[in-house]
Image 1 (cartoon, protein in one colour):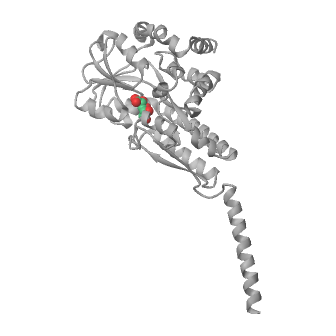
Image 2 (cartoon, rainbow, N blue to C red):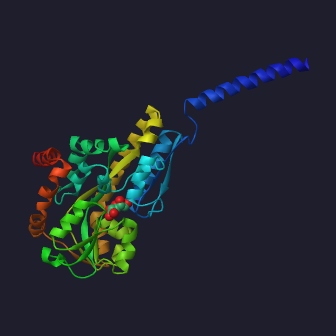
Image 3 (cartoon, helix red, strand yellow):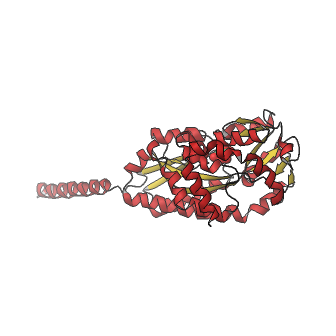
Length: 336
Ligand code: TK8
């Protein structure tokens, strides 16, 4: 009697183990896929809040099967290190300014061209359309899967020396630029003394006077407290920097199709959150910054001389970026 009971119990036990193993193979275990990502900005930044939004959305949609591990303030490395991590498969996602990815694809330099965009309408149409897709796809051979774009924003110039109203005011300023060639060429044309540097080193470099100035969107100037070490700001808006949301192909290929779809959806939901928040708070941010900085607001006709002086950058880089792509972008924006 006892023996018969034991046999039945064992049979039930082994059967349930088979089922448990079965469901695991289908990939539905909590925390089975972990997306690790890191940014240069701190946890007060909208970029970090956008990541938190994506994490909540994705973990909810996949019932915790796909989770996210977030790092800020360059603790996981700077933009270039994260991009290298995608290739190695040590990091799953990148969402920094796409510019530094130009090390792997020249097409990415398109967005560094000065004064390419003049409005958010143009930004959204180009990035979310075929040109934006072509740039993302150009990273595929490097083992990077580009899904979409979030907003870093129009870049504005700050410095510790003087108010900038005209291009002449920039002459001789030591400026930090992103570690990518187009901004370097742009600021050389304006007569500045540009130094490429990773974002993680910028605050200290400004504080110690290694450089006089930098350029980044209003929100970054506020969230990263650049106003503590920069007295002057001007709305140059010389470049719109998109954040590129890019995954490691090594990770992507392991992710079952249904979860790839969940990730895509979460990236786009976070994009909509990010753009809406960034744009609704812009004026408030400028008002807040003006408590600490002398802000120069230029009218569109005052921006023109900056535009004219930096125009040669287009010819300098068109060959490298791909003349057809540059023309396609210009035509697309003109016909909007
Ligand atoms: C921060 C970087 C940064 C960029 C820079 O995560 O280096 O100035 O604007 O966005 O991606």
